[in-house]
Length: 179
Image (cartoon, rainbow, N blue to C red; front, side, top):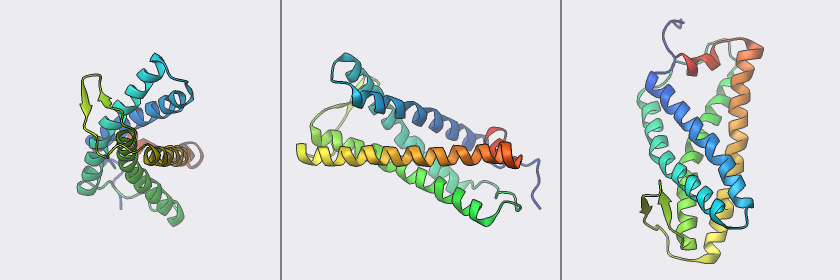
């Protein structure tokens, strides 16, 4: 029997979740807006913000995965159907994988384009791919598509949390808020 007083997630897990959420939910609109601009200082600024957030996300996601593997959360309540448990697990792990892959693919694409990746306007990441314009276009197109998959997974994740909170009226959402 699960102890309802025992937190499902550690404070570290909750902090990493909400930091990740804030960064991802910030970088998505920045990425969409910057892609629609026709150059200029605003686009340059937004690219820098987008690249900085992606760079910051890489170690945070790695830390989240390590933390999750070494500090697994309590299982979902037993009354939740097996297909919902499986769906939650699949969405979580797809998000983890794509949130690692996405910034690396962006880094490869920008490296192949030949542009610097400035982080916090203070230092530049080294290129990790030789300059190749055609390859850059392909990789950045993949980066775009992965972004849309991440958006879809986030919508599923958020919808699931809201479903549990407002329809099922259980504590699943609150596990990530209060433990």
